[in-house]
Image (cartoon, rainbow, N blue to C red):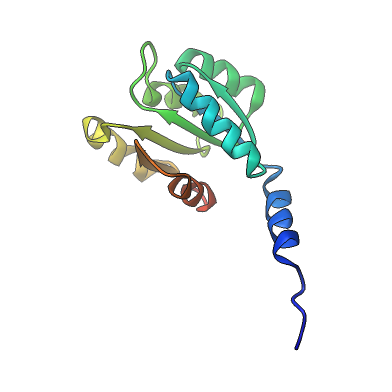
Amino acid sequence: MAQPLLTKEQSFSFHKEGLRNTKVLIVDDNYLLAHLIQLMLEDEGYEARAAGDGREGYFSYLLFRPDVVITDLHMPGKNGLELMENIRRHDPKVKTIYMSGEPWLFWSRLEEEKTGYPVSILQKPFSKVELMRLLSEPGG
C-alpha cells in the first residue's frame, strides 16, 4: 500500500506554515473576545493583533498593516463601518469580516459594502469553524 506524502501531523504543520504570512487585526470593544480570537488565530498559525475600539483599531492598522480586519460593527466612538472607511483610504481591498450580534441593524450598509469590497459577515455568537471558513475564503 502506498504511503501518504505527508502524515496528518506534517499536513497540519504545513497548513500552519502557509498561514504564517497572513496578518489579522481583530477590533472589538469586548476586549476579552478580541484577545480570545487573537489567541485562537495565533494557535492556527496566523499573525494576529487585537484592538479595543475603532480609534485604537485604526492606529493598529497603520502600524501592523494586516491582510484581514475582523471588526465588531457596534462600538462606541468609531463603529466598524467607520473604521473600515478610514482603513480603505490606505487599502481599499483589505479583506474585512464584520461581526455583530445584530447585523440586521446595518444590513443595507453591509449589502452596499459587499458590492465594492471583499466583505463577510459573522453573526455573534459564532464558532471557530465559521470564523476559520471565512478566513480561508479568498477575498472575503
